[in-house]
Length: 408
Length: 131
Image 1 (cartoon, helix red, strand yellow):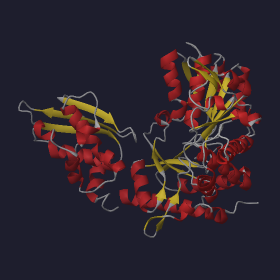
Image 2 (cartoon, chains in turn green, brown; image 1 turned 90 degrees about the vertical axis):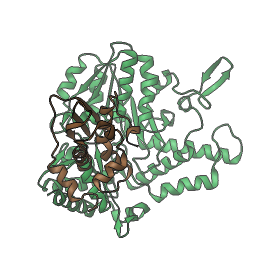
Image 3 (cartoon, chains in turn red, blue; image 1 turned 90 degrees about the horizontal axis):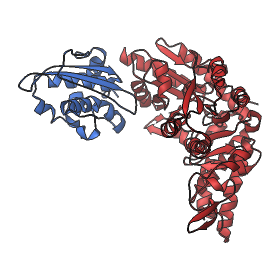
Image 4 (tube, rainbow over the protein chains, first blue to last red; image 1 turned 180 degrees about the vertical axis):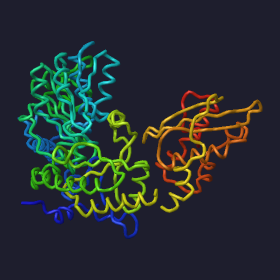
C-alpha cells in the first residue's frame, strides 16, 4: 500500500500557509526541522489544557497524570527504536545534547590522553565540536573516516584506522547534506571487533528509516523529536544498560538524585540519573504523539515514499544545465538533494526560490568540513518528508530555471 | 524581488570593477560571515595624506555581498580614511538602493565590516562597526 499523501497533507495545517498573498509555501526544508501534524499539536495543547503539573513526587491527580503521560511517551519512544527497556531512553534537549551527554559523562570517565576517537568527514558540527572540546581538555586524538567523491564512507580506510585500537567510533547514520545512509550495522560490528564503543548520530535516520538499536547493536544512539514531526526542545539518548549504569551523572539538580545531604548526594536510578531539573514535559507528550503518528503510518511506507520523491528530484535537477548534485545515487541516500548552480551563490538561489514560496536551505548546513572537502563554500539543499510531493519538486525545478534566467 | 536583484547588483556581481588584490598595499583585512561562510578580503592603498588611492576586494559569496563590496570600494577611492570611518549601514543600503531583511543585511554589510576593521587596525571585525 502506498502512502496517501493527499490525506497526510491534511494533517499538516502549515502546508496550507500562504507566505505572501496567493503564494502557498512549498516546504522543502524538513532536514532542518519537520512540520508538525495536528495530532502532535493537539496532544500538547490537551496537555496544557487538561493535565499540566510538574512530574514525579507530586501526589495530586494532575501530577500523577502528567507523570504518566511523560513516562508513557518514553515507553513508546523506546518501542519505536526497539530499545530493550524505557530505562535506556534518556530525554535530552536534542541530538546535540545527547552527544554532549556521552562526551561529558561517558568519555570524561573513560578516555585519557592519547586515546583515539574515530569520527567521519561527513559529520554535523554537533558530532565534531564536543570532541574538539574534549581534545583540548584531555588530549584525546581524533581521526576521520574519509568521504569518497560519490559521497560514501571509505570503509577500507576505516578498517586500517581500527588497527589503531580506537576507544570510540562516533558517526552519523544519515548525512544531513549528502543524504548518504551509512552502513551503521557494519561500522558498529567492525568497531566492536576492535574493542571500541559506538555512538550513532541518528538525527536524520530515526525520522526517515526503520531504526532498530538492538539489531544495529549500537552502544549509544542520539536523535531529536523536531525532525520527526515532534516539537523542538526535546530529544533522546539511547544507551546500553551496562554503559549507562556505570556512567556518572551529567547535569546535577533535582530529579536526578536519590538522596541529598548538605555535602553529598546519591544519584537516582536510570533514566532519571541523567534528567536534572524540570524537563520539557509537554514536549515529551508531543514526542510520544509524534512516534504514534509515524508508527500508525509505518516507517517502511514513509521511507518508500521519500525514496520515490528523491529519485524524481535528483533526476529532474540533474537535467538542469549548471546544476551539480552532491551525494550518492538515490538508492544509497535519504530524502536530501544538495546542489550548486554554476555562477549563482546558494544564498541567491534560496532567496529567489523564496519569492515563489519555496523553502530550501542555503549554506554549509552545519557541516563546514564536508563542504571544504568538496571545495565549495555552500550548497542549496532541498529535503523531503512524508508530506512531500512530485508537484513540489516540479515547483523547485521551475524555480531553479527562474534563478538561471535572472543571472543569465 | 526585482528590487532585491536590481540590474546594478547583478551587474556588479558578474562584472566587478574592483575584484583582485593589491601588492603592495597599506591596509589589508579579511573576515567571514559565520552564517553562510561568505569570505571577503579588502586591500587598500593610502597616500601620505590619508586618502584612499586604490582598493580591491577578493573572496566569495552571494550576489548581495559581492556587489556591495564592489560598490563600496568604488565609493571610497579618493576619499580620506576619516570619511571611511564614518560609513555605516545606511551608506551601504544607499549604494545598493534596496531594503534588506536581517539575514541578507549581514551579507550586504560584510564588506563594510571588513573595511572598517582594516582601517581601524582591529584584530577582529565586529558588528558594532557597521551599526
